[in-house]
Image 1 (cartoon, one colour):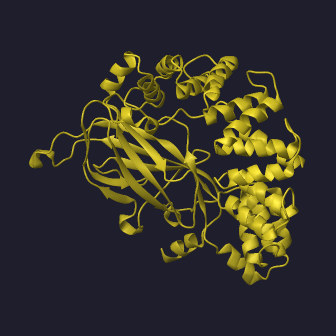
Image 2 (image 1 turned 90 degrees about the vertical axis):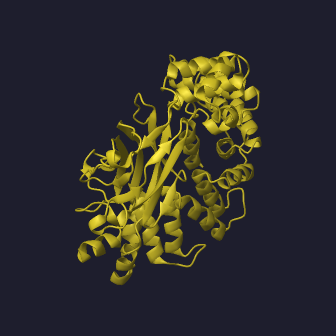
Image 3 (image 1 turned 135 degrees about the horizontal axis):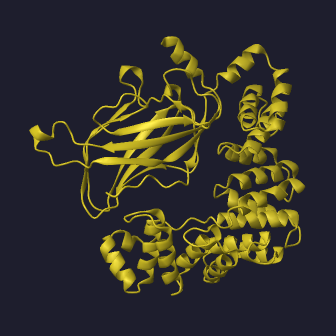
Length: 467
């Protein structure tokens, strides 16, 4: 059972990185002008103070200032606001806007946890488990994990299950571990889904059930969990819990192998010896997968005019066969209305008077040609109209990127890549004749979106052949 012990360590690294709460947690203030929020915060309103802290932390509607965020979180935390207490603890734990101090972090996280904040309860449990800012105490960690788990907090459920698996801080009980893995798995935690699959495959704490094991392996594998991909591939290779299918086995083992799973690489070599040339060719023709990992925790480029550009994913992890989708979000953080000039979103290529460009780079930093849209002579252009942005408002431009149209030359090989957008505001050349108002002028860049190519796509070869 030592294998499962690593699971808790993987999650435990999140001890002090709980994100500050987004604006929608306090909708009343999100709909108010920033001047009204500031006035209320100055007047002692704890919700407004917490919201001001969020705005300063994220650079939304105001210039990003971590020290100011800590100032406002502290104001609200001292009035007993649990969200602010947890956020202040997170800032101390990560040294954001204040000198890093783990003991002070635990102090504020504990205050939030004692008020019933589930995230803080889980964070406090991790602190005790790792001995960060407090004396290491696995039993105390279990106590706080249990409180968070009781509130349906998935991370708390998973950590509690790991403790029951290894008998750390609580008597070892695989049936109880399976119970909590299931709760976390049903909320979409990939590591919990994988562990629950293992429990069903080997009969740990539950009745042995190969079909149930395959079910949970598949859910985790579809989220890109390499161990689950390997286990699912192995089930297909053995015909265990699913009809034997060497082509499907090859597919899943290949995905695991591209992530560095050595067991999967050995399994691939073994089943290749059992496959016919036609089966291998069929397996290699299976559609590619792109894993849209997540936006990098990197602030978008800011400017004095208050225009913010961010790339947002529709899901935290997206697995698709041929394309990925995200949204480019323009947000007006200023107190003035802005007008964005219309035009076309471009891939890496010739700039026209429109001003939104998408850049694609490899993990090594190499800039790679990128196309968007349907390809052909007009590839790389998605048209959008001039957009008026009122103060504090946002505009989202949906984008779909087809993996078989990445690049005009060499195709993307399995590996990690980054997408960033840059907006260059400028006046329309038709302004004088149309009497349109002045457009926003300046340059702003988005955060980075990380994309992982899991395997090549046959469409790459077909596209090259047709060209």
